[in-house]
Image (cartoon, rainbow, N blue to C red):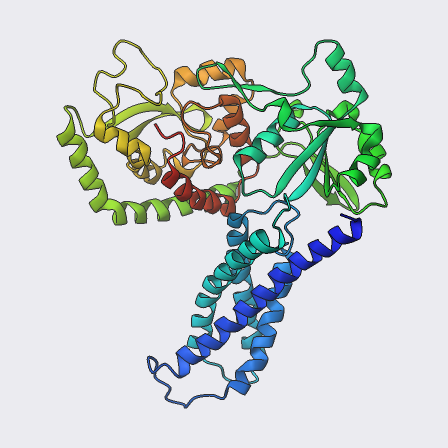
Length: 493
């Protein structure tokens, strides 16, 4: 496919998304107009206003929504957006656009519009836009993208981030990034001839054993970095990703020059672990670019916002789930001997210990002979009812009380026992940085499938990413993703 052809396809993808959003917005507007004034379910004491009065407002609404969605990057699939990304983007866009439209209508004061109409309309927009985005993605995937493999990606270099990127692509099929191959650099060849490893082919699991991370045959070697231009043209590459260590940074400028007149994206994935961080952020201060390597985990106001959200959500959760909690507690009590709840000391923020509460899912003598050990997939210590509770994470629900008390947060790194924290801190110097924030009932690592007997190293990286990139929006996103992963029951044992 030529560069022009690739550009036309990307533009057509954006057109499909834009047209779908506008059609869904106008449909929501017209259906709301009918429902409010013609359905007979609402009183219309002042008479039915003509549709011609409302239509100009719909045009204004379409422009506002389009502007906000365009500004927030809702019309590009080049970044590997998943459906969850789209839905969260739609929600934030609808909230912001609704406030802006209400402000415009209030300040213009040209005509008196029904406030109930706008209330109903803004409730309907998210539902209509969600349906439209699902249909548009399905259409692009099954009709227009049939035979296409997503964003054709070329990797350059063999820093540890290459293996993690490939692992991410494999674990998140919703991403549209599709690695085609990789190019070696002169330093890669030197390291390889000296017996060095060309990439992270294994990681540590929870018990300290090595386990495969990525098969080398998954991504073929297409040549050397000096051939980047010809490889991009020959394999119709959309995205070049540099996974080189910091000492090879001059390659970034060299490759950018090689690709300067080609219609291909170029991105650099730095080895952040080498800098003992999980985030780099570009700031502009007085026209001077600053790269922030490390910042405070949560500021004072962030802590207030997060704690307020935890209090409201955990309180409502305990009230709404109280009947279910009673039923589950009775099932635990009646199915095996022992207490209904299991209390265990865990380590939370700043190394402070607290008593975490769960429904008991094992025999009361589970660790009497073995001592502190990880649960395995076919662990004989788990009771029949406990197995079901663990399968769907229902045993964790009593921790809402821990959240309400302030021992935990709804979202954060999962707490561990002191013996494991000390063990992992010896082998991973940055492990204890997870404790810069409150431990959570669910976390960024868990919604990426890193539960149970999975890599502690990978879990730590995801936890550190959360610590250094916290936002209320990220917490809400993780909670929504948790529902999906709980239903799948992956690594839940």
